[in-house]
Amino acid sequence: MKRSFVLGTLIVLALTAGTYCSKSGNDGGDKDSGYDKEAMLTNYADQIILPAYTSLQEKVNSFQALANTFLDTRNTTNQQALLDAYKQLHLQYARVEAYNFGPAAAAALDVYVNFNGGLDYNFNTNGELTGFSIDSTTIESNISSGNYNLSLYVRSSFYAQGFAAINYIFFGTNAIAKFDNNTTNRVKYAKDIVTRLKTLVDKVNSDWTAYRTDFISNTKTNVGSPIGNMINNLAYSLDVLKGPRIGWPFGKQSNGIVFPTKVEAYFAGNSSALAQESIRSLKKIFTGNGSGKGITDYLKSLKKEDLANQVTAQFDAVITKLEAVPDPLSATLTAQPAKVEEAYKEIQKLLTLIKTDVASATGVQITFMDNDGD
Image (cartoon, rainbow, N blue to C red; front, side):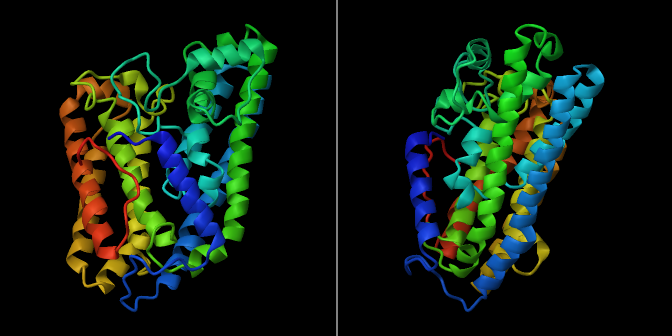
């Protein structure tokens, strides 16, 4: 899977602009079964997406308060309390990351908060910044110089902030001791990356409230429509699960060479938990959380009940296999490779169903490309 980060970004921003500017896209690709898609989108907005972003905002606020406590009094007790809050925050982010359209795409939330490498770099060298790498070199340089701009839209900026940087600064090797050197600059940088995270989340949460009307009123399935965006992001999130989260650290792009330090949240040690939460949230999107107003129900209205049931069952298969993969994933990659392989294969099956069968049944065009096979 090689997705051009620059091309992908331009596509996302273009689709976002189209979605903001129009309440009703063109008719291309739309399949009308008489199903009440506005009620479905209202369910997604009011019962799933907005509550998830509100919860994310609350967890960011709690994390920031505990981060300030730790930075004022740096000890293992405060660090553990911060780690517990961090894990809850990152898990909540896993519940919103598939909504990377509209306000989230406009703010580039995903690349600034939880950059996965953009799916465009060969994942085969320890020294390369790929997948969920931690760029300790740039982070330490930023701290030493005190000269950095976290708003820059470049890879070095993405890897030097967000969850990767928080992992390294607060929970990395000798994290507490490192604050004793260049204390002022290090504390400032730690506060800046947390504030940056909060600013981004606050903006997306606020903008979604205004975006809601456009979201629920555009019932088309063409490129840039809410339904088109959701199915595209289901597929893309599964590609991330298959690649940067599981497959790439496991050696699927590197002839079996494992890269344990490139798992998500390496220092926090909850990579598998994040993968599990990601797939649960994707199932929630697909089923509409069992409300009777989800993509599954839309498929049934299109006389695709067998497909809806097949995909739901495959979600459950992936969840079961991932739950058998213990944390820390960095150790499990080599200690229990058979379990990782089983999970990977089930993810692969689910991805194919979403990208081909579900997209075709709903008339949605998948707007990103990969070349490693599904």
